[in-house]
Amino acid sequence: MRGLTEKQQEMLDFIDHFSRSEGMAPTVYEIADHFKIKSATAFAHLRALQRKGYVTRSSKARSLTLLRSDSPRHLSLTLSIPLLGRISAGVPLLAEEQVEATIKYDPALLPKGVGGHKLFALRVTGESMRDLGILDGDIVLAKQTPDVQIGDVVVALVEDETTVKSFYIRDGQVELRPANRDFKARTYPPDKVFVQGVVFALHRSL
Image 1 (tube, rainbow, N blue to C red):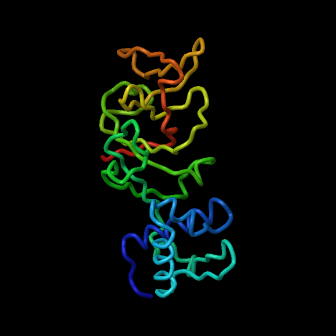
Image 2 (tube, rainbow, N blue to C red):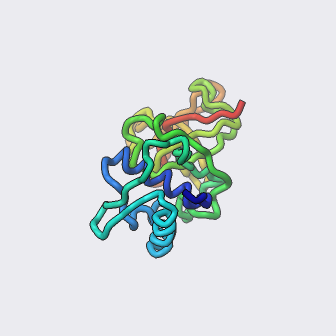
């Protein structure tokens, strides 16, 4: 088999992860949406993967199939999670200009309920979540979702500033609670807090 470009490898990884987590292959439109590219561009990448012998597909919906799926080491099957430099109001969460780098993550380590969501990473600044083991410079991995449970650690946008805090509701207000006694919890009207995602893992460079 011939070598892959970086984008083709990322697409192959996504197809593998999607197929295993959802129990079915992604459509061309779902692939295009995930990578924020046009459907025609996604289709061109898939045809290249077919020519190189990595996938096969027919005219039927969700017929995309990985070849040599028994060789994950050969395919380097890891997720590429975008590390965002900054989250800004009015800008789509995973806009290309916000992506600073990518984090490689083993899909086998994804907790239940995370598969199928768009994922992103964010570097933590400060010690406000220290008592939960989230330190200055750590990278949190989050799933993009509007569904938040009380006590979840969330990435939230408040007054055009991004913060990582535990999510609570208090007297009809949103309370963003730190995990450090040196910091105070803050409450906001619900329409002033925009939850960008729920944290599911921590990445630390030693």
